[in-house]
Length: 210
Image 1 (cartoon, helix red, strand yellow):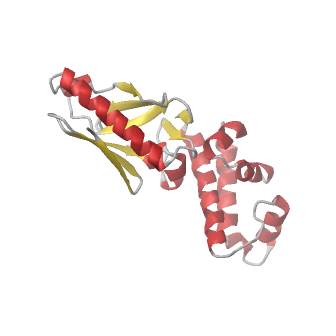
Image 2: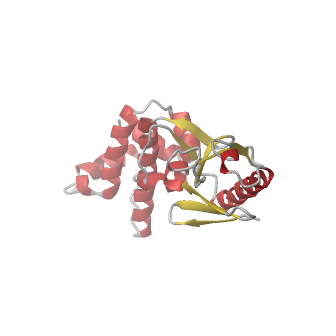
Image 3: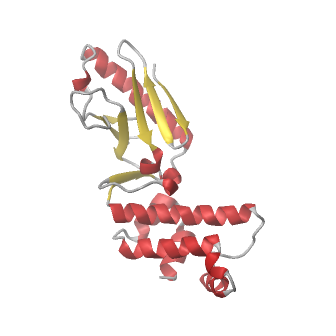
């Protein structure tokens, strides 16, 4: 049976059986809640914020068990896995490959490609917008942890804060400005961003202040 765990921003699946493998999925690239420090690639996908770490671990184990079964049927041949799409109980799909994209190499990578609560086929610009919305959420949360009760989600109050002496260096103001720039360059609509983030108020704040 496979095992899975999250360390940092990587979901690691260890496949058992006669042909053991380790498969990694970068959560910076493929989970909204972890994407704050991620960098966009040509094509990206994000599990929505509603998909918890526990769910990702459980699905990683499902993927690992399916991989073990495929290897057993293929008598340990890695070629049976490369480019293989696997569907888990949630109906989400995961693609197996390796970091070198070498069909003859050992698979060491997997990532979510579709299904419920997945934003798939994300352009680099749209990924950057999602990432910067997430960074804004984290900036607000950090201020709350420091007992800052300012109403940053009120566009008028945000403007007042921005216009204060030193206001442009406030971490929330900086994050809003960055997110504004990203949203101007993105093609994703607000409905898509809100679905991925679960943060209607944050998306609308940035959109209102563009």
